[in-house]
Image (cartoon, rainbow, N blue to C red; front, side):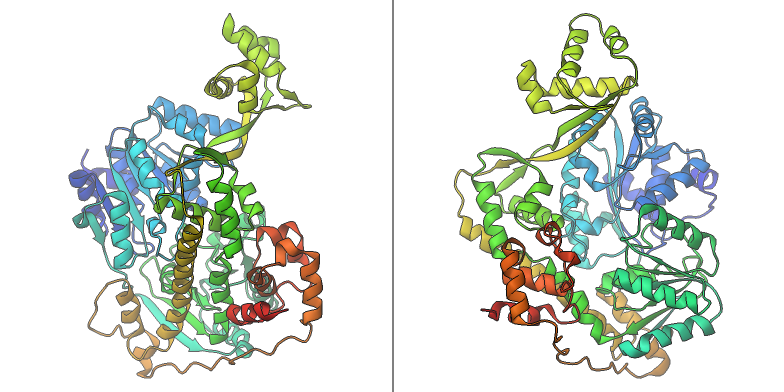
Length: 639
């Protein structure tokens, strides 16, 4: 069918947006494409429409559950068979999706990147024809991008393993260097990269210099005096979201907080309230907004500095997606810098943690399997930092990742056991009877460890896992997997552990430097002596010669004078060496290294701090307003 007919029938549009036709043409011509469109620029249509034209399923990989739910609801309302697989679904819902996938009924299946670490999902996809492998937020593949996610580096290999006929990468934020990384990672020809530009003529871009003492009053004044409209106020910390939302509500404004510390039900309630409102104000951390299709956002305020130009561009891009005028305002305060920098410093591991990690990995044998959660805890590395370190070891040729598997399963029979066995005559029924009889019996769930059971029954592990899948597929048992283990293979018999530690530290230090520099770039943009909008889009490679006319510099002709941040915040009287020494002596595993202690004082959590319950200690985050390097120097000098 003609694409324009499908566009009208299923999506109600008569014309394509800029770049959409070019992306689809590249998918036909090159079987690969990259779409770099601004937020709200119509990226999703670039895989939704082709999904209706290709024979097979379109697999959409996205970290945004909100996006999955919204798009699936929309597609189903238009008669398109779409579904998702994620950990929030119950057994019945997940089973129905699997059945539709196997039968060929599904046209689009949405999954998170982590789904490819699931052996049951990989087994499910065997034999399924993948017409298009679409990867949203594709900038996450770039090691030097603003939101590197190690799982994204595996997606290109996953597409090859699944023999996907076409690959599409999509993002709203990519510098020229990141575009090159995406194209290289997914084998996309350079002329199949479609970049439509980042300039938004309908956004009125304001920048206001504030001090911490004046910021609340400025925000309240803006929200009170401007015409009502749907708004987002972005903040850095969860506690700031709670405080600012409460203050606005007390002033009579319709405001509610949103952050990752709230439970799912509360976040859903706030999101649905805001989506339905034409004047609701949500005060949110960056956990809010990604993947949400609300076109009439009239205002976006940055109460705190964003963590970089990529984040800023993406966040202000959520305003005015209907093409109507919208206002975005940055309340620029240099005193936000230490908090933002500290997040970057907190991701840099200690040399001792990397030494311990390498010692374990390099003595585990030529092939081994580990629980990343347990490994994270043993070496006091946050899970994302650990995944990044393991990915670096793969890039350095030290390790090769194998197929993950689950070390444990739980089975709940849904019918009488004798009825189950009767459905499998002969040896298969006897095998199932033995398997379930030797399982660890609970009140309703039976525990099975495939490795142990394989040795006990003298059967291949694969047969045990397959038997559990068959019981679930036939509706005889509910099966849930747990304790994922990641397989790795050593590439060389001998490695220089010290050289590897140094190579890892160099990579982490480079990334830390880049993240800190991104914070500085936000202040540079705020005080830029020229068109701020042109400077922002120029960062992403878009060249504009004419001033925009709708940023603060263009309106005033004067660069913004930012207030000077104090060179050193006064040292709190409650932090003294005697107290710190006592705390370190009581918790040497969590606070023994100066960087561990600095993270504790700056309010940056880690597995060891959580395990020791030190994130609840009164001294936790005492120095969060200080620059991490100053705190680290103080901790290093302690005797």
